[in-house]
Amino acid sequence: MSEVIQTEALTNLLDQKGIISKQELLEEIKRVVAKMPRAGVDWLVSSYPFSN
Image 1 (tube, helix red, strand yellow):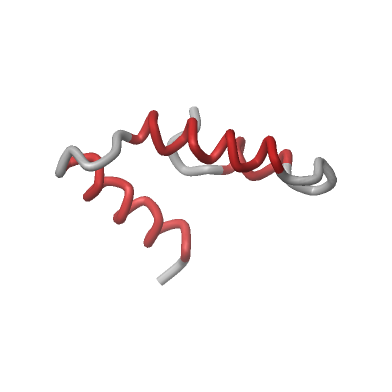
Image 2: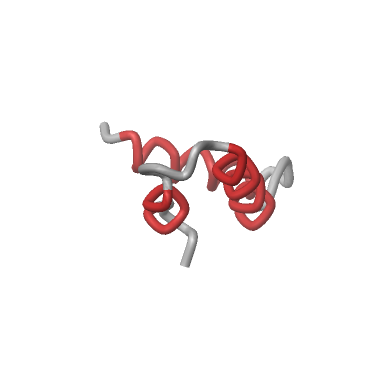
């Protein structure tokens, strides 16, 4: 099973159970990415399954 499918399934469960919404998770990912060195991480947020 690919990591994308696993991540989407886990994210859906967390969202359905009210633990963290997809939007909150995306915001946290953006905060983490912002702290990383810029080289090679721009693709991360745009490629996340529900970032659109």
